[in-house]
Length: 331
Image 1 (cartoon, helix red, strand yellow):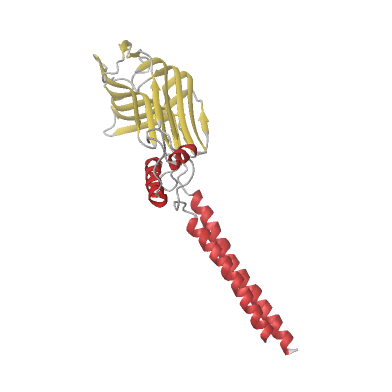
Image 2 (cartoon, rainbow, N blue to C red):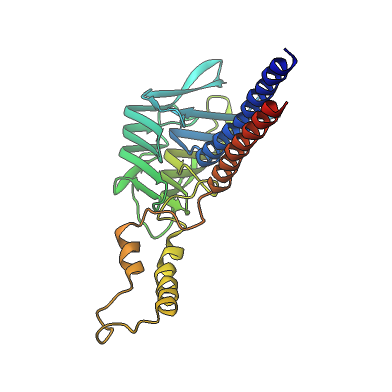
């Protein structure tokens, strides 16, 4: 009876020990999968209109900051807005003041997989300032912007704008040589910056039109309006980053050097002279590198330590089971 109980206890201990070690190995392997999945999700944003205005009222000693945005959207979740008007409060006796009206005003932002994209479209638009309800600040037929950021590829940014716009009733031609300044007697001055784009290794930004405004209309209880008006803005950031570099992106220089090193090591190991004159012969490593550019480099897989740890844990579990089983039989 005692020997039977001892064998039962030994088997139970064996099962418990094996289960504990197997759980540790599973956790290590799960950690490897988590390490592979890390990385930034990417982002995208777009806005048809964005204002940063400082309005001075005649009957008050303080300035009123007025900020408004039309169809401002953000991702990683896909977003889409198509409102056609934007109003400001607090400058027209408590009534809403229409800043923008357009026939088409569309903003989109999406992040899907390894791609982030934002775009805007604006058509038949009129922008007004407080104090000038009848005279538009700017009228334009069409404008748009687009930003595309994809992991492992160069980000793209573009903006479209007509050759001319109307500023305070004046037709103004736009050039890429630099900002355009418009001055209207009795009203004020406007500085236009058109079609600006900017890209980095992972980000892109595009703006169709940016206006720096300084007007003094002396109407509608407004003494002066200063600030900026931005039209058709789009930005993005590619998913990924340092935590999850894209295959063929940041590792590309290492792959170009690898065939030469493999060729030299193969020549030293085999000590076989190359066939022919050597002008048309490539090392096998060079052909393999071009045929399979997506293969991971030897020893470069970040999950390798976790896989090795899991394998060792499973071996330890088997050894413990055998040892405890033998002890149980002897007892």
